[in-house]
Image (spheres, rainbow, N blue to C red):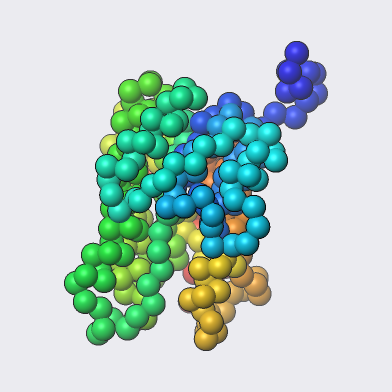
Length: 260
């Protein structure tokens, strides 16, 4: 008898799920991998450019091993739609994708008047196209295996509001937001749910680099968010706790967007 089969044993919210996380080596992606493992995921596919993230310390795969969860790193450039084939293939080894989380993204802090076409295309390719084609790969996998899975996209409060110094980023994350609504409609006939999370300022290495000059943003809760707090929102949307939630935006920003 397994521990989780014993009377009174705690069962994880994601017991047995095969979860794919793009951008899983750093920041919110890394925290998401850990949290889904803590909630009982059977296998976690870490899709990123490299196994080592921006933060110091153990690689995500090593953290998963410490938790006793099967992890698999797949080198993935989300700007290349063809790279998702290897991700799906890795997930198929464990029974196919149950939950796909599109976290991978890049920031871009530059004044609007200084944006050139190449810069805009790069940000859109990673942040929007990576999410679009990642979602497409997820949906095709779930439909092929008959799984009523979940797709969760990570946007940003920057995708709900505009900032002159982050016009490319806001455009790409706004596209992720509206695309998720269309995605939810497209996959609903197959029993698949799709939702989008909008983090505010989260204390990750990427934000620390971007905000070295400080930030004028006032957060009602008085602090930046932690990556685990965004991962907690992902767990909710991936679990049966949100079984009737699809096509929704979940804002996790400490109250920032409520007061600007």
